[in-house]
Length: 104
Length: 432
Image (cartoon, rainbow over all chains, first blue to last red; front, side, top):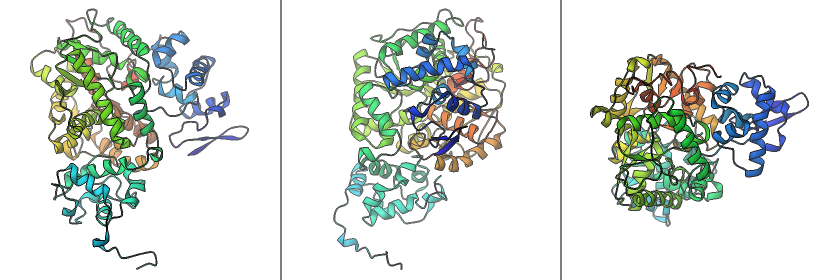
C-alpha cells in the first residue's frame, strides 16, 4: 500500500499502484496517477476515463476495449497513442478501477 | 529451547488430512517421509532469503503434524508454483502437490488477493474477466476485419462443427490487447488448417488451480471438454498460457477426465506447421536481439509430469523467425520464475514478487536483449511489470507476435508488428 499525495490531502493506493477506493477518484487523482506514468492528462483522456468509470459504476466490470473504442468514437490507434500503448490497463488504472481479475 | 517450544511426539499425531491427500494423490509413491532434509529444495526456491519459510520447512512441518500452521501460512500463496524444488529433490518429493493441496484446505474467503475471485468468474461467466459472449464475438469480428487489411482472404468460422482445431484464448486479449488476436489469426490462417473460434468456454487459463479450488478447477475443465466434444474438434489448440496448459493436462489426470480430443500447445503447433513447410517466413523483419524466458508450467512442470513440453519447439520457432536470438541462463527446465508464477500476479504479495524478480532482471540484463519473448501471457505481464518497476529498456513479447510478424502472405503481407510487446502493435506507426 502507498499514499498518493494531492494538493489537499491524499488517497491510498494498493501495492500495485491502483486506487484503493473507487469513490475517492477525482480529476486531480487521475492527473497525479497519470503524471507518475509521464502522461499529461487532456480533455480527451478524461472523456475516455469518464466513460470507463460510468460503465464500471453500472456493471462493476471494466469495459472491454472494443466497447471503449466504440463508445468514445476513437480508433485503437488513437487510444494506444493517448494511453502510451496500454489503453486497456493504463486507462482502467487512471480511472480509479481496482486491478482486474485474471493474470494482469 | 525457548519457552514457546514444545516437544512433538510423532506417535501422538492423529489426524493428517493434508499429508494423507498428498500421499494418496501420488499413489503413495512420493512419500513425504522420503525427505532427507538435504535443503536442495530451498536452495533453488525463489522465496528463499525473502521468507522465513521455505519448501523444506513446509515438508518437515507437515511431517510433524503442524498442518494447520502450513495451511494458514502466507508462504503457500507466496509460492510461485515453479517447482524448481520438485526438480531438485533427489527423493522425488512433489512439493508442488503439497502446495496445491494446502491451498485447497484454506477457507475460500481467506484466499489472499484475487485468485479465488478470478476462479469464481471463470466458473460463473465462462471466462476470467466476465466478457459477455456478444462482446467477445464482436471483438473477434472486428479484429478479423482489421487483419483483413493485411491479409484479405483471412477468415475463420465461429463454433464450426467438425473443425480440426478448437482455439483457446486468454481473456486478457479481448479485454485489453485485442490487436494481439490478429497475430493468432494470421498464424492459424497461414497454416492453412481447419480451425474454429468458440463462442463459449474459450478461456485459456485456469486460476482455480492457483487458488486451490479443486471443485472449480474440475468444473471448468469439464465444461470446456464438453464444448470441444460438442463441436467434434480433434484438437484443442491451447494458447500461450503456461499454467492454463498445465492445469488442463494435470487436471484431466487428477480428475480422471478422458477427452475424445488431443490438447496441443500452440507453440508445438507452430513448430509442427513450420516443419511441414506451411509457413513462408522473412526473419529479417525481426532484427532485434531477442531472448527467451521459458515458462515454468509448459516447461519444467510439463517435463516433471510427463506431458508434452514447449522447450525445444519454442527454440525451433524462435531460431527461424529471429536472426538475433540469444539464450538466457539458466534456461529450459532449469529456468527461474518470471516473478508472476503460482498466481503471484494477483495474490497480493507484490513486495515479494519484486524482491525475487530481481534475479530475473539480472538474468535478462545479461543477455543484452531488446525483447524478452515468452510464450505465456502470465509471464508476459510479470516481465512487463519488472521492466517498469526496475526501469529497464527491454520489453516482453509473445511468440505469436514474432511469428506473425515474420509471416509472408503471397507477398501481400506488410510489416505489422516489428518491435512491440502486446501493447505496442502500433509501434511502427504513428497514431492517426
